[in-house]
Length: 522
Image (cartoon, rainbow, N blue to C red; front, side, top):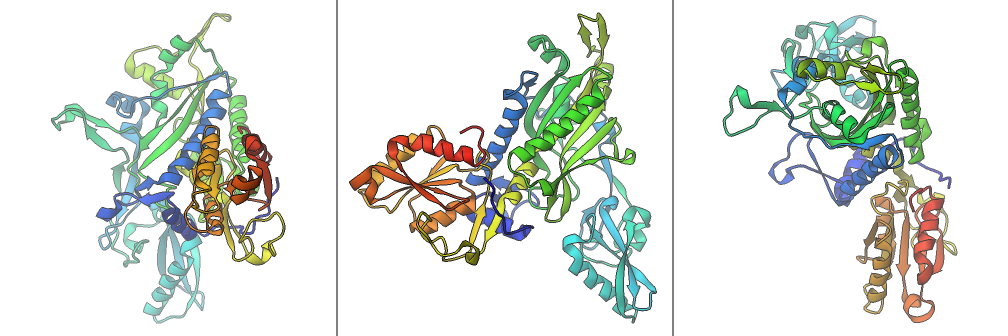
């Protein structure tokens, strides 16, 4: 079903407002003032993220014969992170502002020259981010203030580079705008969270919370190989929490210190790695499209050689056009044989595959599609958001839902396979004649679909509420249901059309409509 959308770009403030109002995501520890960039998923948010994870697991494991699952520990031997290079290399240079106490990566601080009306340079201003984007007004105002302090007229801003191109002493704070000299020189900062195993906090018991799930797969390579008797090409998939002490978390749930990853390591014979890398780039891109992502808002961007991680032979990012610009959703990396060789070297255990037919041993290369569950949920959420003006909907007509034309409609057009709620059961009112039948209908549907029972407020308001949380179908029980025809009304979120269906045929009719909307699981 093709659906016309009316909003080409989403205002992030609307998503955050909707999130709190409808129960998608809440600020963590809110009653105590919150914790920066830390979030709790509410009833609808956890349902959305769970649906995204289940869709990923189904595509990566359940519908394939060449990939198995794993769930490794969050706390692992410190030697795992020594071997992987995280202990020594997972550090970033940081600068601090002495005024606002903000902390930034220099390569994330964009520097702009302030140019006067006569073309003369009047100093520098800075901002955190890859481009002016959403902070245009703020940075322009700083530029005007800079010009005014020199007794000059502001002309324009010119992109000058990043903070790494300039001494910290010359750059104003990108957060509070404090004058040059407010930033410290860069200092190295470890991105891993440190903790201790046992009651005594000494260096002998120091461990780290894992910064990625991938290493848990590599250190279990031989265990999986032995117990499953898989042979390359084969993969091991994992969903789990990771922790990174990010310097500049932000953009809602896009970048946080505690996050959930969906990673798969695909082990292949050396020499076959490039074709499998290309295969997984296509496969992962198409997965997003299959779940309704707008093809014009997603792209594949191969990394330049200068961008590649030390372990990577090649990497391509799948990016989404977020409100603040293009951002990474998923990385597909050709990690070559770096990880298995490193763990073999540090552990003393052979991590290789013996090909019985060819009578040869080799260390497999690894192709890694790595996706953040939180980012994926956010992208699907943003992509689903639509605003439908009242004038575009026209007057209510036969077969259309009550209240369809009285006001503008906010709707989340989630693909039915990831919608937090697939079917809402709505008795026309709380009248005691309707409730028993409505409860029976709900009980019959919830065995097969993700459902919600909603009888609060008027039916028109409930339709609007279900539109706003992205429910594809609403089933209404009215007085005709219990007094005349023993049938109910199915209302479609996208077309706003209604059809009358006998209760006995309802599950099949709901499944058919969900399939028409793109479901492959109904």
